[in-house]
Amino acid sequence: MNPLGFLAASWPLLLPLDYGLQRWLGWDNRTNVSFFIEAARLLRPYLMVIPVGFAMHMIFRVVGSRRRWTTTMGLLLYWMVLFAAVWVLGLLACRAFRVGNWLPKMICMLTLAWGALALAGAHRTRWWWTLLALVGVTAISIFSVNKLLDSLRLT
Image (cartoon, rainbow, N blue to C red; front, side, top):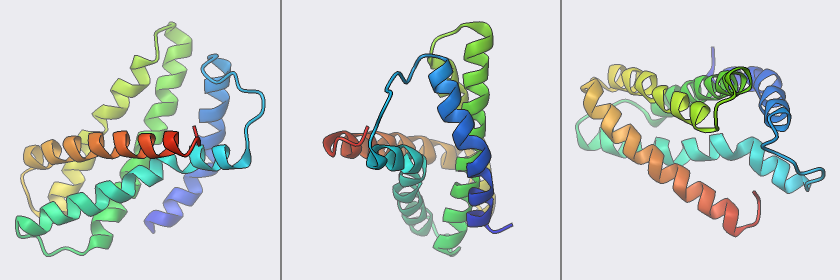
């Protein structure tokens, strides 16, 4: 399936679950937010994938991969849907086991292994090396996108 189609098919299921569970857990107590904040919240995970895709693809090019940028981005979009689904499962676990917000964050980071395996297979690199690069690039991307959205008051 086309990665963008896969992404579009996942939104109607994952986004309402994410919003609803966060409200149910009491993590989001805002009663009314602007359209722009809602749009930023909707797009945040996918905004993070764009710099990750560019950076990872440049790294792969440096080590000799000749795959296209669309291959890298497609795999990262598949990974982001997995990431979002695991986030929702983590929210359900928070509700069931009454644990803090560390659980969904931790299990989402475990999905980096799947992303690294997929990227390593496509670009014919070692998976552990790809995992290290992906962890670093993802951490920088998350920090940067969150900082940008905060500075624009879209959080």
